[in-house]
Image 1 (tube, helix red, strand yellow):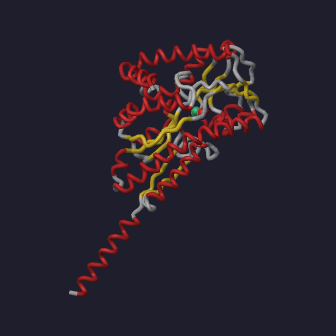
Image 2 (tube, protein in one colour):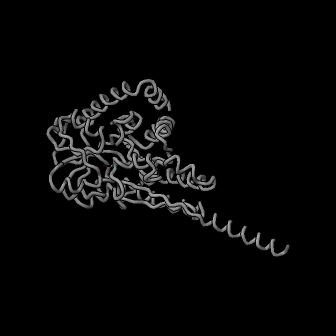
Image 3 (cartoon, protein in one colour):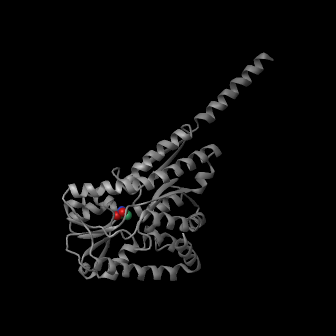
Length: 324
Ligand code: PCA
């Protein structure tokens, strides 16, 4: 009897230690380099998940598009080749208008407005991702978008003929509307595109200007504050459902912390990136009223088109955003 009991105890202990050490490993591709604040935030998030899950869930961050290129990450998560990944929402603007929303010029321009837009957008974004077998873990805005160019830009007419790097359908559309030539280049290939003269201008944040050493090629950044696009960290639903409830909670908690930290980091490092650009010889230019007016007209054309395309949901989102 005694022997049976101790055997039982031993097998319990074995079973317990096996489940306590059972470890799940997830790959997390992101398209941005280690100097980027989104990636710094992701690295902290992965550490937090490790701690909060007592080592049960290990997230391996693959930065700089080393595992998948930016436009491939969403599909990789959908197909569970990567269980979790970071995407730039507006990269998928052609797929559904909900992905285009925070890439529209002059709809929401500061952090407060962008956070409100996110709240208005969130339920629809979650629904869309759920229909594709994924869940939204968190989302963080990039710093404000402005134009990198060597030219003296007084009005939108001065953008004509520029070789304009686009990172999304929306930034390509801007080029089209102002008479520039859009060339789609993702962040990981941007330095090379500037070095080889494939592009001579683009619209993005000081953050990407810093990551790609844009100051070596382009000497001005116009602080247009045109919009704040967002990255989102998305999870494959089947992979999530396969986790035990405590680990699911750990992941959600680390995600919520990353979202809060990320919005702050975006703002703080947004300022720091501008200082770095200045230190490296780039002029931060306050745009003329004419340039801003011209760009906001372009923005209005795009917002109107978006509302038409997004139908009733789109109208509901914009209405609720404007009331916030
Ligand atoms: N940087 C990314 C997207 C938005 C941003 O600020 C890029 O230029 O690719």
